[in-house]
Length: 106
Image 1: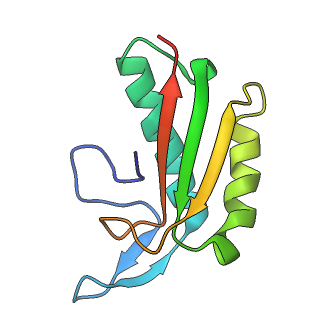
Image 2 (image 1 turned 120 degrees about the horizontal axis):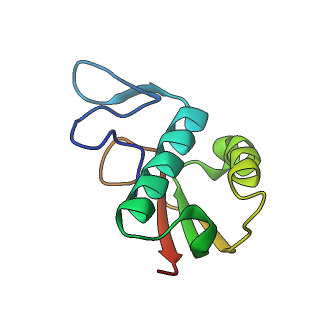
């Protein structure tokens, strides 16, 4: 799950150049949108944020983005602390900087 606004091509926190390349991005805006998307999917599936048991996080720029991402993660997961794996990868399929894979109980 990434930060894209469901049903649109909008990606919060991403500014694209005319050629489609990434001009700038805001990792905090992308993380917030990603977390909100996960929450919505869980609720639509009959689960909830507090039932998450495992999270795999993919970042495209660990060096620059981990601190901000980790601070937001700590806020969103203050009451529920599932197992977490954070990986750096060289790219994601769309111009985004963060993506989550989540396992939750029903």
